[in-house]
Length: 325
Length: 303
Image (cartoon, rainbow over all chains, first blue to last red; front, side, top):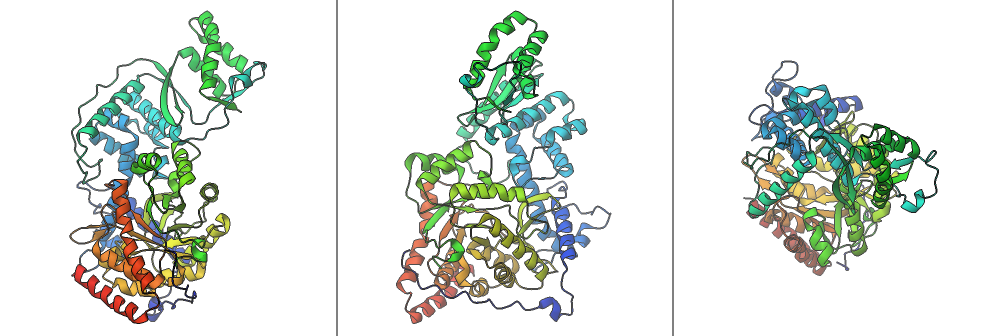
């Protein structure tokens, strides 16, 4: 690729024919352009009807066909509505697939059909507000708090799973600040020292051992992928009806977890209630001394708590969890 | 042409899109590959595994950034935070130029995550060109815009797609990432002659060419990037290279991705067409004959 013909001059391209003007039609204005984009996105992002078809009735009761015909041309093979439907389907398949991948635990609790209904309702109320699909679930917890009916009859478990799985998104590529080492902490006055927890760490107090549950699901799914190594998916996973062996839902049990990463691998670290209290207090801006005192006050075994604090801090500092506030 | 101000004066050769299933192979075997194209948005994060992998790739290979979320055709102001993140990545990769699509995809802060075709109007061209210029001024690298494949057309359009492309790149004074597969897909979906499109493209602005596979359905063709390049698309590629000269070429393969070796071998098929152009560069008669042959061969494979 080293010997190329000489570069031709960049000449001005032939100017477009004024098709609209030629027909006596006024040119589109900037305002009309924006309205066209709004209308198109509204049509593209409307939830699909059963059978993965574009809804036949528009929001105001008119036939959707009539609305779409006003801005999309038909061709010799497809009506305006059929052409729009290609984009309408792609929109939903893409977004549903993204949530499908990001929320395996939620899927396992709800089952495929109820998970899909939840996803559609969520995205209909909270369409993407970010350039990246990574953020697609950023308001799922809020949605579940506002509309708990989508989680029935396991509202609390579903809500906690949504938090737990979003924490993994954050841990995967969330910001990391320069970590403080054990040496950085030595000799500092606990009464005035305020530490921050790394932004990629999420501390969770859960009523179900969702860490074990998700690990069991991932183990099962990895085994299934191994068995189907030569299979080629011909349709979106969120649309397929593949049967997978169920993993037993977790029983109620209080657990405290830090979702974090180490060497760019995500981990779930179980904490004691006392350790969780210390970290939460630090995260919320309490001084080191105040955080430890609070934990000791709340602890069922203050003596053991006090004895363990040094070891906890050594471990957390080694994991790089602390940074400057 | 191979090297121009629109692609940072690069003559990169034939590359492939960097995709996650190939990470392990690339990092452990360090296979030969002229260059990789990365999807910018996959690395516009704060930390973590994506950036760790990217840094390892950057140690070994030339990398060019390709975006999917700039949405030059959207009507609102450019997102300054997005541009800041993108600029941080530009500094990290030292990409000689970057590309994104001639499309829109968001309105009023809601994102479609799709490359939606624009109406081909003067108002749209003005908005698009302004946003391209603003992005280039902020990012301080040349920008090439890529023609998208489309499945719908607007009543509002005032010109053809290739006239619109010309209108935008002239107003923005930017380069073109010419996707010949997208031209093929759109030509079949909308019933135009892809050679009319190729012949109207200002060759001197083409900084890169994309090739890819697609899927044929009963009534339309979908740009799925899940197949080898089809013969008809290779014919268009040959014609494009004959018009533009040997140009940075990249194969996209995004679904049902085979091994690195298979994807790379598919991309290297482009070499044959580039060599043909290099050998016949000074022979106008041979060139004319080749163009005629390409059109005839295209007609045969699409019949």
